[in-house]
Amino acid sequence: MKKWGSKIILLVIILFIIFIVYQVATPNLIRVNVQEFSAEGTEDVNSEVIISEDKKLNELENLINNIEWEENSNNNLNDTKFVKATFFYEHDKNKPELLVEYNIFFDERDNSILVHDKDSKKYGIVDKTNAIKFKKIISISKN
Image 1 (cartoon, one colour):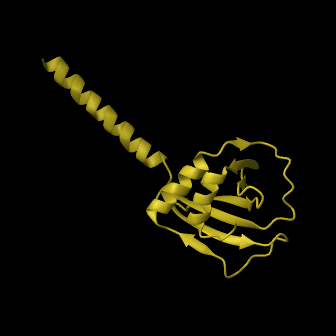
Image 2 (spheres, one colour):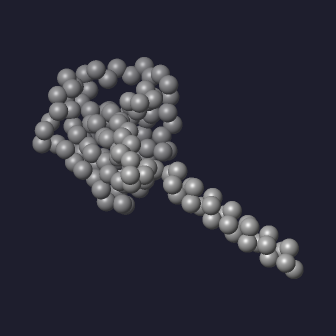
Image 3 (cartoon, rainbow, N blue to C red):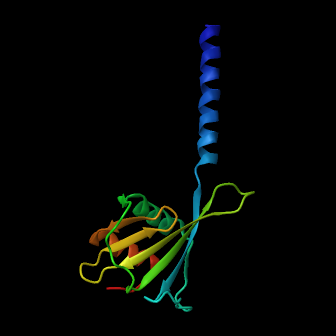
């Protein structure tokens, strides 16, 4: 019986350690800054939106995580207005936040959104249904 007791205690300790490591290793999205830009790249200074509500942050993170990313895209985005969304992740309270920037282009023809991950240089398309959710969360009034 003592063998089983020590094995169970060891198992509980291992599971606890795994839980702690997972909690430390997973960055936490704490806010998103959104800014509108013209096709020329000039910022609309009155357009900055800061999102910090947990529900909206979770929805945005789910939308971004469900995008299928592509390495190269043949999209001509030079003459399109866009939104820059900066995601702020907290990895450790004692370290600076991790920033991930996305340029978001709205396709007026079919209401889809093209998202460009500036760090990985990948593109992804958000379908019409999720694009409506995305626009609503970031409070951008594009049609």
